[in-house]
Image (cartoon, rainbow, N blue to C red; front, side, top):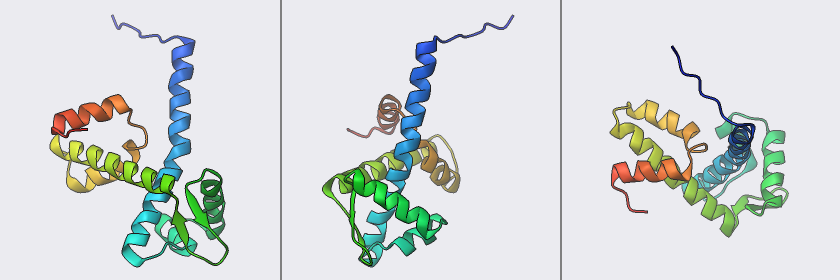
Length: 143
């Protein structure tokens, strides 16, 4: 007979709250990481380049950049490049490192490099600190 597992309403609400927070931060993390990459590659990050890289429209990028400005992650002025604040740089680096740990863990357990790279892009935003810590432990990475 199958044993059913029930979680309390509070546990359920907590789980979905964590997922909602992860979804909200996912876009911010992707944008600051891409802005950082563009600055490193070309010396600047422009809205048009972000739209191309993400496959979205310029209005979508502009709305996201405005949100990131309100959150103190980027600085931007009309007709100028986009720059990361110190908080934006810190978030970009943390996101990049988290991505690397997840990707490296997936590769270590036998996932193909290309698949690991793609999967890490989604998992990195939803992995808990506890799970990430275990990935690092498995990979023998010091925190």
